[in-house]
Each structure stands twice: as structure tokens, then as C-alpha cells.
Image (cartoon, rainbow, N blue to C red; front, side, top):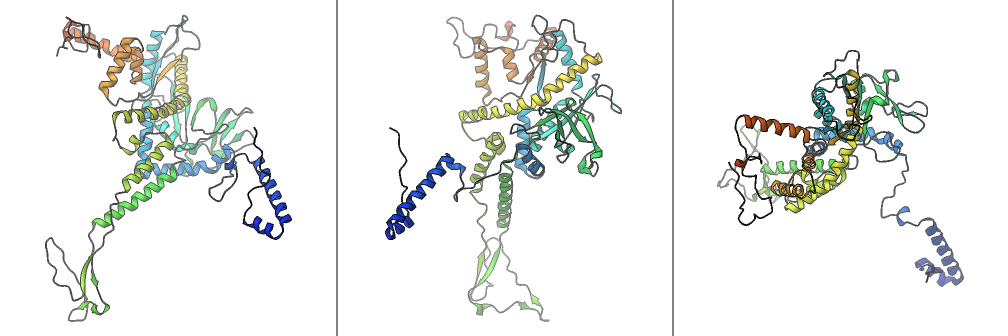
Length: 527
């Protein structure tokens, strides 16, 4: 049965007072107030959409680009300051970059296909070799390897909210490419694309777009505007969008410029920094033992001692272990200043704040706080949940920078004749590749290795899949193992890692986790 709204709302003190004096007026008052409440309820189905004295109420309805225009530069400067001067902030950024890109960068395994759908191994090997050479000096300054380029781009992308790189293909005036492949990258920060530059309806915040919102060009300062040059529109150059990689953290549909990943945690980071600095200074002061002479009555104060010329002589009471002070006057006693520092609650407070910060940036608390207490199960659960956040950011970074850069690299190889595309390569697959991100680290290597071995033996996983999950390139590993086996055989060396050699003891070994069959004991590996 449907519930009906009550005719009257509960009378308050004023209603009862009016009803006591004039019952008719009291009834009319209740009817009017009830009708008003019902009208409000009809237009406010959610309690949270109306202001209240007990909570903050936000009415900011700006568009995403209006918000970035208003706040992006200030937030970017705050994030840069924290990276320079705050150890926790610097550690957060380093942890995220290391887990997204890693020490060797995002691995690239070329996967060009033949007309029958199989991988063209010869062409893939030529591309791997050419890319390995190019990766030594891939950018215009020739100061960074490709792995370092990826870390710089990723760190800037997280700290500033966006980073840029221009592709330079073929002959460029004044530029000597760093490898046989005539292709280089020019990295630059968000300051080079001015927020204040707008022109007509299609160019805003330094980005020129078509009617559908697709970027068609970027307006870029020729020199760094923060170094005193390049502050006028005449100092800008128009760079076609198909030559620019714009990696941006975008929170809303239609947003053109990125916002720093630190935006929601900057206030908390600054509070922690100030609080810890205050506690540190207080503890430092407390470590300097300070004493004072307390006089019980004003009559006991006779003024400072003076010498023969009437000059005041400072009174000094020395302190040493085990000493007895007998120079106090009547009514005097020694007092100590105790600041109750260090504060034992600092660690607990800091842990709670760092957990909130870790949730805000999607990093693991253990890595940020360097707190590795806990059981194996708890740490692995944290690692598994947090690794999804790293994998998501890796996917964004690969899609916006690594993959399009590799596609241009393959194009440069073809146009320059460095690596010719064979005739039997399926058109459109020449730049196909697998991009190998960082592998989730092992907490207990013995248990993880046994689990992977069991999956491979049972057919639920392949050796290639396991190698990729460990962050390796199966083709490179195969070449290394083949060469190593060949050299070992030439020198008549036998290692336990070579399972086909009877001397290794693994030829008839029982798989991990299984018991040996009766009469067939598991052999012991040779030394």
C-alpha cells in the first residue's frame, strides 16, 4: 500500500505558541509550512543538493577548461616546489615513475605479420636491432637514452599534469640525428605551450582544434618563457599536431590541458611538511638541556653581582655528572625546561596521513612510507591492488607516447632505407608490437617461482607469457640462452640450468610440488 505524505509537519515551538493564542492562525501556519516543505522536497530529491550549516556546500560549476585555466599553473608550481624541497613528495614521484616506466623503460617487442598471419621473425629482428641502436641517443640533446627519456616524460607528466615531445623526422636544419635512423625527439615542458594564448573560437590555451575538438596544431614558444625570453605572440611557432606527443592527465571529457596528479594531495603534503618540521625543531630544542634558577619570593632577588667597578657579572652555575650545587641563595632552586619532545604520536599521525596520500595518487603506502611491516598475505594483497593503478597509468603513458613514437620510428626506418619492409609483410602490421611494462615484483621468490612452474607444466601459461610478466623480452632471452649454451658446449662446461644434460640432474627430475614415483627417486642436481 502506498504511503501518503502527512497533512501537517510536526509543530515547532512557534507553531504551538501561535496555536495557543489563535488556533485558526496556527492551523493556517502549519498548512503553509507543510506545503512549502513538500514543494522543496519535490525539487530536491537528494539531501546533499541543498546547503546546510553543518557542511560545506560547493556551487562551482565551471567547465573543465575553465578550471584548468584558473588553477593549472598554480597547482603545477606547487607540485614542482614540493618535488624540490619535500622528501616525501620526491619519493612519491620517484616510486610512481619507477613502477610505471622502470629502470629499462617500456620494453618493445616488434610483431610484424606475414600475409598468413604468422610473425615475420627476420623483419622483427632487424627492427629490434635498429631500435636498440636508436635508443642510445634518441633525442636532440643526445644526453639521455630512451629509458631516461621515458622517465623524464613520465615524471613531468605526473608532476605537471602534462608533458610534450616533438618528432623531428628526416633532415632538419642544424640537427644531426643520433643514429642511422633519421628520427629524434625534442622534449619540452608545459610552460612552452601558453595557457593565455587564444585566437578565435578554435584556438584556446595554446591548442588549435577543429570543429570536432581534435587538436590540429600546438602553439609553442621557441625558447623557454621562464628564462626571460619568448613572452609575446610573435615568439610562438605553430607545430602540427601530428608531430607532437601531448601526454596529459585528463579528469573530464573535453578537457584540453592536464592537471598535476598531486592536485588533491598538495594541502595534505604541505601540512605534513610543516608539522614534521615543527616537531623536529621542538625535539632539537628539547635535546639542548636548559635549566633556570627559580626564586620563591621577590625578596630573594638582589640583582646581579657586580665587580669592583660596579659592572654586572653574569651568574653562571656549571653542571656536570654527579655534581652537587651548593651555591644557591636562600629561597632558590634549580628548575628544568621540558618540552615533552619527541612526540610519540608523530609516527601514528604520519602513517594515517600517508595512507590518505597513497590513496590520492594511487601509489602503494608501503613504498611511499617505507613501512614494510606486515604478513606476506597482507603485503601481497596491497601489491596486487596497487599494481592495477600503476598498470592503468602505464597504459595511458604507452598509448600517448611510447606506441606513437615507435610507429614513427618504423616509418623513419622505411623512408630512410635503414630497415626495408619485406614484400611479404601484411600492410598495416609493420609497426605492430607488444609493449612490455614493469612486472609486478615478487614478495616471496620461492613461492612465486613454484607457482609459475606449475602453471607452465599444467598448460595454463606459456614460457613466453611468464618471461613477459617478469619484464623480459622472450626473443632476446632466447638469443642469449642459445649463445650461452653454444659457448658452454664449446668449452665442455655443464651447468645445472641446462636440463638436457644428464649431468645436470634435471633430465628426470620430478616437477616441483609432486612426489617421486616409487623406485624412481628424484635425482639431486649436479654442482
